Image (cartoon, rainbow, N blue to C red; front, side):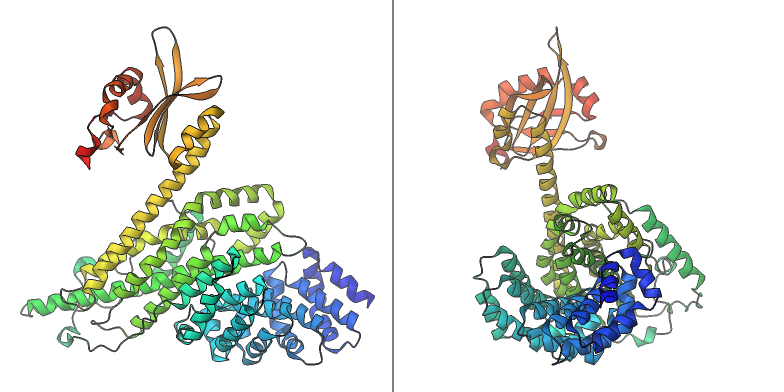
Length: 632
């Protein structure tokens, strides 16, 4: 008994775990957990095994490979105590984070987890639901859960939770439904009046965390199935033996369509990509080229056949890039976010729950939506033909993509938080380096993964425009694609506007800190945000003065520095503003209400003569004063 307790305590120290493992500690502890009659000793052994699952991917995987079957038997046994089952269920939550978690797909294990999902002990069913959530991120395991009755059990779990006053149970049941709904096969089972009614009733809950989980479950369940229809293709068999790509297209074989990136990729990401490209070229053998089509071919049929080849290529690029993107989102959640969340619930969290939320933002929700997009694309493209459609999928998902707003707005804060905790927390830095060194990261840093959603949306516009250009007039997908492009580009514009708005809010916070306290209400009036600001200097003939020229969302201000703090000298509201760069031959134009024009023009000319302003901002300012009505 005492030796088991000693091992348990020893395993709370991460560095000691490898020694215990090498000494054969895992099989010994499993044997004690299975056969020991003394309950206290058994609990100590199971606690020691739980400690194995907390810190290290290696330890989780070792226990998964050697002990999953034994732990499942304890979890489902009618003779084991609830305390023993709780410890097993708790361990499985962490084991499900392992890169080797597909071992859970074995029937005995999954049916055991599903069986205890509706256990009378709330903690046991909570841990079981968390394990199933972690597993459901993996598409193979998501469908395996469904195969063994997991969807039906999850609906029962939702019913049970809705009848309780326990907010945590409601949140967990809704989250599990959200995860399972990622698979269209599961969504088909969940799209029934009973589930809709339960979720609708749960909307009455006032707890914001519960309500957020309920809304997400409703959104995921309501995503259409986008099942593939068999469509008779137009046959271009007379061109099968010919090369239909143009010489220019053929020379670009295996090339990628690059998205415009607002943030430069990390050096290690570029290096990894270059290494992958070298490897690909080493293992690529050039096939003999097919001859071009005969000159007497029907020009219209040849044009349509070439469009068909190009359209197929773009469709498969949509699928392969989405698959790669979803895989990387899964790495963010399974390998970084979830392990940190589990550690945050332990006695020795690596970083705080607030830092975790700041770093990862809405990545998990984005993963859910994009996984459903991938599932729908796979369904359609698996039955690909030249009459198949995919535009309707993007037309629907365009509205869902507004969730990217929160993520993109939060990204600068996420980047700064990650930088701060890495610098200030040596234990976290060590954990991060160890995790990033694993094969699944392919040499990429966490920041390289986190930036991927920021870069993804512009790529959809690019690929959909490519798809549109290769879709012939009259094609059943023509209208869908054109509408989808408009919607995605609207979302991109919306995201950019929101990003600018958020940046303006951050700039306003910084600006207020540099002004006298009495000016704060003026700056915050009407939810003003900062667009641009410049440090300026001028002279009244006797004294040189310093200040700022600031363009706000609805006005301009100029200030003078007084005792190290800025003081607003004048605020001028305007009807409209547009800002451009002198290097493009464009000017800054302010449209200001008629009654202000005379006084304002004089002030701008006196305080900001062209030489001073141009030298500071590298642009030219021209005030054109017109009535706002004339420009509506």
